[in-house]
Amino acid sequence: MLTGAASGGYTDPAALAERGVTVLGLQQVREMGLNLQELGADALEQAAAGRLRPVIGQTFPLEHAADAHAAMEARTTIGKTLLLV
Image (cartoon, helix red, strand yellow):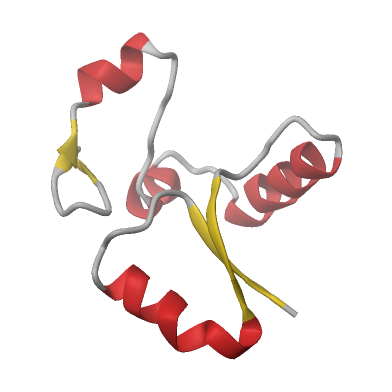
């Protein structure tokens, strides 16, 4: 399985495995019989406990939402892009 990157390239699955990272597509999750709702609930619990932290690459004030969208469309962002209200 190839994992896409914002730059348009692909991540090497072997490099992910070396870091102990496993990436599954939604179809693979379904084929394995895993429950998406349970996985989602677990992820939220992990985040609430501080064990999962998103990479926040940039923030924009709400009035600059168009700039945030332009950056994402241009694929120049890393991590999450947040609008600040």
